[in-house]
Amino acid sequence: MLQVSYIRDNREQVLERLAVKNFKQPELVDEVIQLDNDRKQTQNRLDNVSAEANATSKQVGDLMRAGKKEEAESIKSKTGAFKEEIKNLGDALTAIENNLQQKLVLLPNLPHSSVPKGLTPEDNEVVLENGSKPELPANALPHWELAAKYSLIDFELGVKITGAGFPVYKNKGAKLQRALINYFIDEAEKAGYSEVSVPLMVNEASGFGTSQLPDKEGQMYFVGLDNLYLIPTAEVPITNMYRDVILKADELPVKNCGHTPCFRREAGSYGAHVRGLNRLHQFDKVEIVQIAHPDESYNLLEQMSAHVQGLLQKLGLPYRVLRLCGGDMGFGSALTYDMETWSAAQQRWLEVSSVSNFETFQSNRLKLRFRNAEGKTQLAHTLNGSALALPRIVATLLENNQTEKGIKIPEVLVPYTKFEWID
Image 1 (cartoon, rainbow, N blue to C red):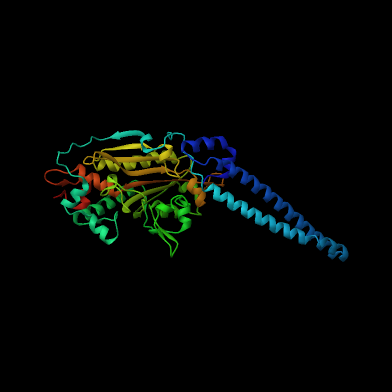
Image 2 (tube, rainbow, N blue to C red; image 1 turned 135 degrees about the vertical axis):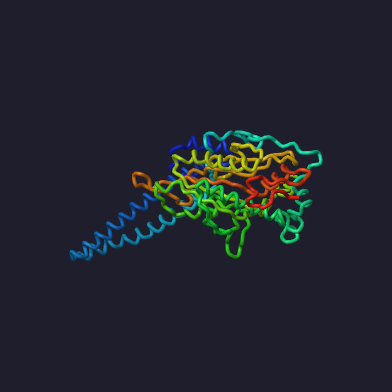
């Protein structure tokens, strides 16, 4: 959530940056500023009336103690009017603050100055491309056919049990899943991240804290009876571990990682591009999260990007890094890098990771602060990234490594899978 003080002091810059993000309600900026003016005026009036009421009460007490009962009673008659005005002003202040809050949560985060303008994924900036695209034989199969051929994943069984987008991993397919999870966690721990195991459902306050709510409630599975949400990513519970926390400056950066299933409704997603593992309602992911000092957060974002790239390099997957344009960025992100791997059988790029800096957007909602060198509290920056999401990694590993003999397992995974080939 943006800070009102920043909006007031930087109105033109706020409007300029929101335009980069293609925000369609710029009038909200002036509405927020006006509501904040109304809030301040009402608060000042309430403070003045309260002070006047307190002074009158003190005067009545002094007169009563001095034996001037008639004069005291005369002045005391004014206190009823003060009480009514204080109540009315308090009610008005509450209404203004609620309205201000409702407007504020509709404003997305401001994009970093490096974010390119654009409306669609086609406008994203390719930062780098790494690795050679494998040349597969003419009879190469897409991953969903490989999964059936080697009995790795049963999509129809998932439909029977739950519905489309909930596959069942079997045999070496299940072992490959587990191997990837353990490998990604081990690599994150080597990079200084502490592993946590977190709940798979969160309350509304947690969803609000990391800006999934009220922006993405339609994409989240909701357990109505208990007013809980299935997590769309481990970012939500891991970051919310620090809600209402004041850290010490020397504790930063705080680095956590965790594996969870992720649940996304993906409403409206259909067509050939979502076939097989390309888009699921439930999938596994290892998430990395950092709580950072504002002066260091963009250096740390580059480090997180490098960590994800390192995983892709060790897996032998060709990839590219995109800097997302304003129109393709998430609601709460200030800067996002997407990593995509090349699917040789499908002849297309598949997103496997997003790494983002949210600056103070989440921490302002979370009231996540640290105490700086002067002893004052300051909002921290929050960052997170997929390291990595499994489905499309599995898809590209199967497709890119298929041979006449079978599917070759990357060398770094063999200690985890305990097998070198799927055949």
